[in-house]
Length: 219
Image 1 (tube, one colour):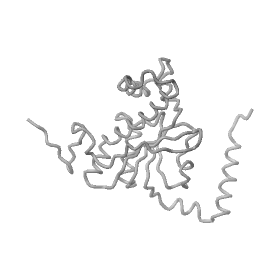
Image 2 (cartoon, helix red, strand yellow; image 1 turned 90 degrees about the vertical axis):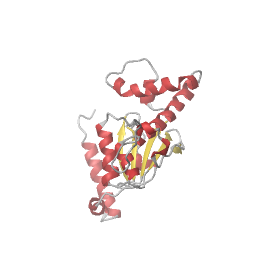
Image 3 (cartoon, helix red, strand yellow; image 1 turned 45 degrees about the vertical axis):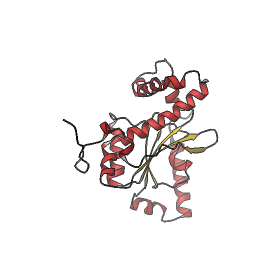
């Protein structure tokens, strides 16, 4: 058994050499700038590599990944990525990409204890509780599939509530939020048709009172 990862370093050298052989300017061009138009918020699952499944080269997608592709108002890491992508990189699209068979969603549907990750997955339990009347009675696999879809839609809504997104919309910056789901079994992505391109769909209570978009309150 290998006790180090030298084979990965050697593989990296082979990969870098092959890139330069086909395109001598590959790395210098890549290093010159980062101007992606897409932010991808995906699951940490090792079987869902963002660039590869949409057949785009490095530099085309800005990526943030976490367990069960969640957007939480308490996750400073994700919120920082979102703010940087929108304000600095000026991305035009944010894709929340879930996948069928998500282990995080599956774990949230049980009463098992997994450690600190249970705190992270609590919001998915809350999501199940809200939709339980429609989910009760579904076969196990259909239940998991439907929860994976509902989780993507929920995270798109959470994304729309963030200050970075609402400020962008208030200043009329082009920004579209999408919810996609990936089937590992056949490699196909599906648009869940939950795209949002403005704050109109959100209940007024979530609208930010930004300088660009002051919210009137009753008295």
